[in-house]
Structure formats: structure tokens, C-alpha cells
Image 1 (cartoon, one colour):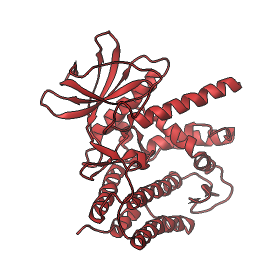
Image 2: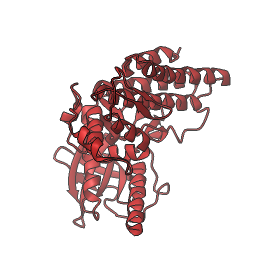
Image 3: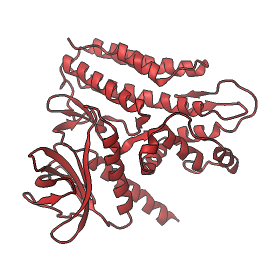
Image 4: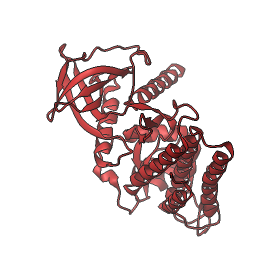
Length: 373
């Protein structure tokens, strides 16, 4: 059993490394990344064909354990990034394929200047007869927010980046999609200092999260038969969801999210265990628990808990952008406090039974953001 657990842990680590490499489609260089499996899929100057276009390989941008990222040019001379990996790599092939297929679908659904776009998705064969799965994405020349040096952004550039992040994430949320892996490594700054959200496969709908919670035992093992039976009776959200427009391929991302937030997951499940009436169950961001004693489970409790968690992530990204700016220390600190005050107020609303929405707090965040001159 111990050997099996160690093997599973190593597999999760490998997937984490793959995601870290493939989630970025910018200025990779071959000496920045390494691989214990090195497949020479395509070489510079080689052409690969999809049903829609012909792509010429320009250079290798990076590589992971099971594939590579190339800079390519289409038949009209436009530059793109190509994520390419072998179709049948041990038992990981299906999972990798699903991630790329979902990334393509989400990139087709979302249409925003500050969210990376997907262009094409197809299978092809190398000269050696190796079948590859290929995802064509918008080419972004720049670096991640995590890699960006402090004081890199001017005052005006940082204000523009804040507005771009807010607008992009608000737009995605209007389509019922949240970026579950929102952190500085999945936000890029182009050479022109424009902000871009990457890792499209991490955009997940409320419905997908809700379905996963009500059909999964627990993380790691604190579920009970009583919880599962009650979860099975819960209906999904009544709101219109974009999940019907996406194949059910986001399950791995949802699992990763709850593996990183097991307390939140267990709090959501335990919300179905009720004892005596309470008109408004509340979720605590700080303790990640739900105080619920209603006789029936209301999906809005789930929604509020996720919204508080996600809004906290959004304000964290805003704070990271400020860290990369050359603003004066006092101004930067004051803005960071203003951002976090909104999160705290959102939490207080929940604690006091005030039915607030994430959209209302995103509107307040927009008012708090400074404007570029």
C-alpha cells in the first residue's frame, strides 16, 4: 500500500510539472526546461497540417515530460504557439488529451483581449510515424507575473494591468467560468506590458464544481455515507451554465483544486448535514467552515462559499500586480489594504446574513482601482 501511495504521489508531481510547463506559451528557451523523456517530434522548417491550416515549425519554446511547445507560423505568416505531445504515453495519454481538448474548447468560448485564445486542435504524424496531439494557441511574447521583477511596471502600466485583470476575470465570470488555478504563474505580462490570463483548462463552471462536490466522497477520506446520500439528492444550479457547451473534461482540474483546498471541500459537503432551522447558512473564509443548520441544503450556500474564495484569489492577483509596480510604498500599501478590505467586507456580509454577490464586489473593486492618466 505504501508503494502504491508513493507512486500516486509521484504521478501527481509529474502532472503538476507538466501543467506548469504547458500552461505557458510565451518565450520559452530549450535551456530553461528539462525532460526525462525527450521526444524529437518536429524540427525547425518542418510543416504539419491540420484540417484548417498548415503550420511551419520555427523553434522550440520549451519542453515537458511528455511533449514540447513550439513557435510556429501559419500559411499566412502569423505566429502562434504549438503545444505538442505524443498520443499514447503510458496511461497519461487520455488525461493529457482531455486537458488540451478542454483548453481548446474554453479558448473558443472565451473571447477577450486579455485571455489567451485557442486557434486549432488536431492530431498529426511525425516523419517517424509517431502520432501527436497538437493545440495551437495565441503566441504571447513576455513573461509570467511571477517572473516579472519588482518595480518593472510603471505607475500607469500597473493601473492598466489591474484594469485588464479585473475586466478579463469579470468577463469570464459572466459566462459562469472561474479560473481555479489563478496565481502569478498563470498570469503573463507581454513585452508591451499588457496582461494575459493563461491556462485555459483551469476555467471551470460553478456547475462542474457543484457536481464534483456532490458526487465525491471527500478529500482525503472524511466523507460519510450520510453525506453522500444527501448530496446525491441535491439538484444542480438552476442558473444558465456554460458547462453544457463544454465536454466533461475538467474533472482533473477540479480534483487538483480540492486537493489543494480539502478543508473547503469538506465544509461544502458538511453543509448538507442540518439539524435545526437557520434562515441563512454562512461560510467563513478564515476557518473555511459553513455554519449551516437549515433543514434543506440550498445551492446558494455553496455558491457563496466558492465566490468568497474566488474573490480572495482575484484580490491577491491585484496585490501581486502592485508588487511589480514602482508605486511609492505608502500608496502601494494603501491600495493593498483597500483590496483586502473588500474581501473582508464580503466575508462580513456572509457572517451577518447579507445576501451579497461576487458581481457586486467586483463592481466595488472596479471603483477602488486607480485609473491611468
